[in-house]
Image (cartoon, rainbow, N blue to C red; front, side):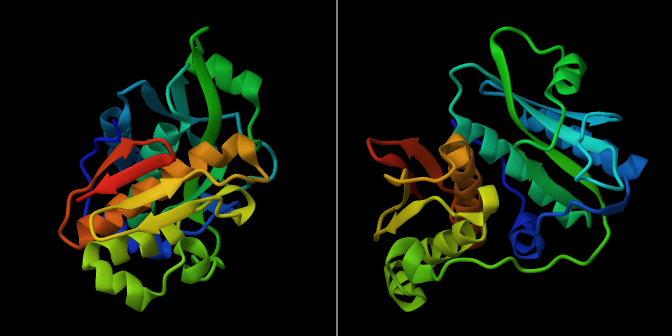
Length: 239
């Protein structure tokens, strides 16, 4: 689970990515073809990622009619939806495109027809894709101490990969930018736990999966290939 070939260009993409709702146009054919290849690679372990062009997005998304749908078999951890979906987001960002995770900004009836949704499948989110209307900006994030209880210097004392993993997870998008994670780090692992109180609990697991992908990319940038495993509190990554 959570096994995925990471790409080096996703690291820089994490620092460039921001949520985009206004676009100047849809991705071109070459970009769509490249993203389509990645969607097929992301479609396993109970997840299918599919690209569509046409109706389906609500009016708050302007200037593009292209979106990706994350289809999950019932019982598949929502963290995996976030993990695979954010891989698509980072690749699109690396290509110069804008993206936005949407939990409510789409017409579910249209999406269901497009994907021929089966009784054992669910759709919780889609991702809009297009040419961004404005340059990317760095969204506000919690102080690193609030995220993991350690300063950057204390993280660096644990190890380079731990520091990179936590800093990368801190950049992950989440529902209304709540950053609903509890991150811990020691000399052997980085863990993301489910906090006791979450305002948007419906999306907390998906948000956690997005942060897990970021952490894995951070560790990869530091020269470590990390593996996430489920534990009693959430998920832990050792590299």
